[in-house]
Structures are given as structure tokens and as C-alpha cells.
Length: 179
Image 1: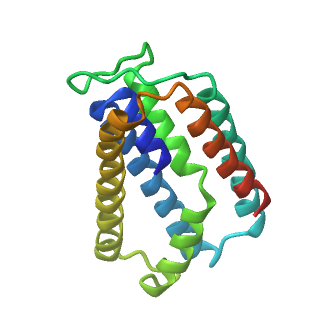
Image 2 (image 1 turned 45 degrees about the vertical axis):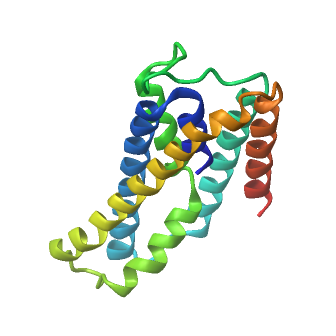
Image 3 (image 1 turned 30 degrees about the vertical axis):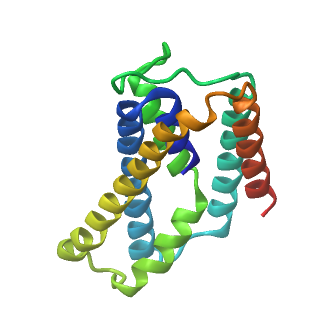
């Protein structure tokens, strides 16, 4: 959510679209991994959740630290990326934010046993479960991107925007680390 707001407000809707693609890919990767773990093993190890939580928290804190020096956002024009960062970087950020989120694995681990029988791969079930996941992830991410692109009008006047967003993201990472 926060990454989508940031990409929409600082880099524009196209960068947010690329971030949404990365987010959807990560969500589908998590869903596939969880699906096969449930089919083959029957569950997910708590140590996997713990490692994902640590890596995710560290990455979130890193992104928050990168935000601290930003004084204000340059208003994106025509949805184009205003910084020298590559388009691929936005997709990677969307992917990493989603893939390092242990809550998604918990969600999928709770959801799939309702639809999946261990030992059987049913492609109709896979499509029926995975397509809505992809669509919902994309639509939600893009809704936050659009909201972020509109928030730039409100927050652009403050010189402390980077500190505000950075502290919020760092706090989120710390909460994840100790939860």
C-alpha cells in the first residue's frame, strides 16, 4: 500500500503500473509456492515465516531510510518517471515489497486448504484461485498509485515529506520485525 502511494506520488502512474506488475508477479509466486508446499508437504515451516519476516522488515526499513533525505516530490508530468531510476526498478520494488511479506504466505496457507486436496493438482482450481488473486492485487495497488498521484497536490508544499514517509515506513519495518 505505502509503496504504491509513494510510486504514484513521486514517480507517476506509469511507474506505479510497473510496480503493480511486480507486486502481482510476487503475489502469484507466493501463491504457487504455498500451493505446492501444501500439496507436497502439507504445511509451511515456522522458520520459513520467521526468515521472511526478518528479510521483509530489513528491506522495509532500508526503503524508509532511503526516503528520509527527500525534501519534496517533483510533480510527475504526463505519468512519466521524473527521476533517473529505471522503469525496471519500480517493478523490482513492487516485487520485493510483496515477496518479502510473510503475511501473504499466511493468507495463502489459510486459504488453499479450503480448495486444495493434498496430492492432487487441479488446474481449474488453480486458475479459479490464482486469477482473482492477481486481479485483486493489481487493482488494489493501482488504486493506491492513483491516490498517491493525487496526494502530491496536498503534500508537495511541505519540505518534510521524505521524513514523514520515511519514519512511517521505518516504523512499519520495526513493527514487522518485532511482531
